[in-house]
Image 1 (cartoon, rainbow, N blue to C red):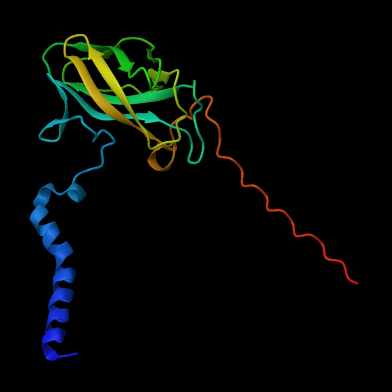
Image 2 (image 1 turned 45 degrees about the vertical axis):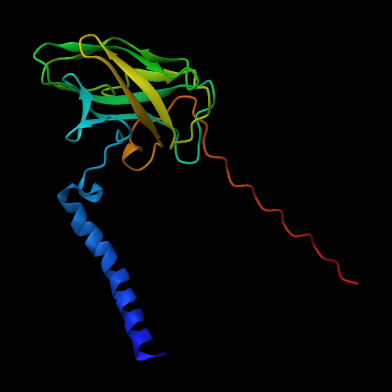
Length: 197
């Protein structure tokens, strides 16, 4: 290897080693890795990392799926968890939630969810108040459901809501009724006995 070739190899190696560092510097303090995880990232970002419209903010939204490896069968139901804040001076309420027709038949709202002004409301406490019903396909976790939240005053907010498996920080939530457990591992067949001659 000539000295010119050797210098080129060293320069390329140095550039490759510096690329991740330079990329991180260019991202600044707004890099994805510096932002807290929020399950509502898909298509609900309005401005300045705030989710929602017309004074109604959705800081968290997810559909609780099955335990890892399990599934919620087609036709089943899954709880919908929302964390809402009304930044308007007057109270508002979530009156309905509508899924896409090819994803589910309806979302059951046990009672209108009241959202007083400047108050954080968690629809999952003490028990889930919302459930996506009549699922068109089995859910295993990792899917996305497109839901339209209808508020009495703030109007409609349409968002893609992720299906989160009941594991890690979600493992303490109540299990989804009707969810099927992960299939048990199939026992491997024992080798056939050999016979001597």
